[in-house]
Image (tube, rainbow, N blue to C red; front, side, top):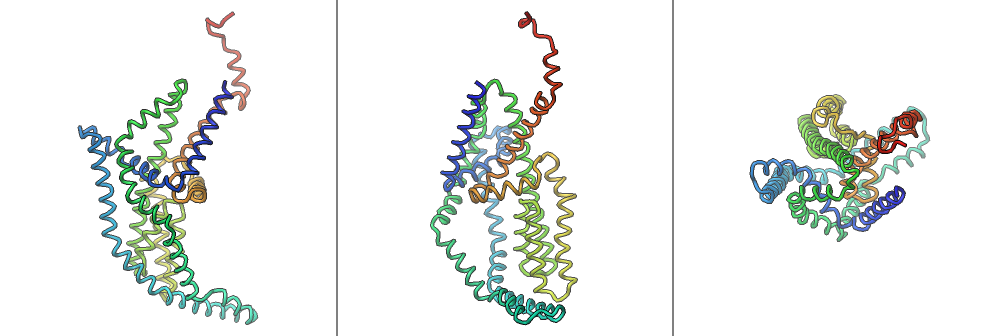
Length: 367
């Protein structure tokens, strides 16, 4: 009987994964809506305790959530648009300056170590022509925009996600009760305990990491702009968003900002100050923001988070990125539960079986 149940569960999980694989092109608005509903559910529960009907509370929170996003876009998009336009206009000049500096560096290397001029010219040619680089970027962007599927996904994400999020948020408690009703009765308390642990990990990671990214993005943007780095707002906000993946935001933002600082500033002191902004940001993240906003309740190692995000993105694209952390949280809880069961079994320690065999039988089973 135990083997039969395992086979049934394995078949159900395999069918579920196959269904996600087949429907992945259309699942993005639904997964995004579910994620928004999960984040907003505590607020709707609070409104419900204040005697606000669930449907009205869900509608209020959805409107507030998307209006907040719209206001943020209206505030920051003009600034970002101006910097992006300026970056595109200045990119040929920046690439030319980069090539000139590379030429000067290669000449110095040639004079120092005596490399043949033919080898240096070959290495110089590999740096590339700025016009070719711009043509490649323009062609890549054109091919992306030309894909109808990408346009359909964007439209569906913008139009369908709010509707899906509202219905998920309105019926969230009902869905949880329905799933609870379907759990095997003999393992009900164990399943509930594991589900509570998954919820605690997800809540701590998603909400804490969102605040962490917002704080770091704001700090980097203000710091780089105050230093006078061109396009500091773009780089700072990008570094904050990418901080959702541990270490990636600081690495990408640091490399990009220091590279631009080398092109913009003649003084290495200014370059060092730009690098110092990211050093201070990492210190704040490690010793202040991470313990305060995330804390010890998140039992997800950064290495596994990086692996999950990369694997999810490789398998399912942006949909996989959204599903990566919840799936990794479930796998982590299941792994800890399995290890706990293994360490308390006779497979790990024979004395466990000896203790069980030495216990007297209950009265109704005694000979």
